[in-house]
Image (cartoon, rainbow, N blue to C red; front, side, top):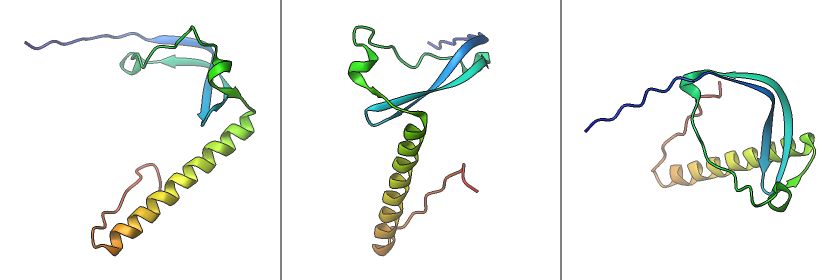
Length: 102
């Protein structure tokens, strides 16, 4: 039995925000109008509307959220580099590639 789902729905979103979540803090960046093409539309998850956002996360400034996000990403890269060095010393080195970097 083979099932195929062909959904095509273009969505126009007004007054959108990008939410940056780092640890237990968040900040919203206003993004304005967005058009989402049909092949990019899917449901990621549902919100627990019984819990207010303030009980789960603490709102912070955009600058602080971006700085925390950059710091967390830098720590992640440092740990990956340390792991690669350890594997290289053991003769098990497999380089990791980031296709988004030059």
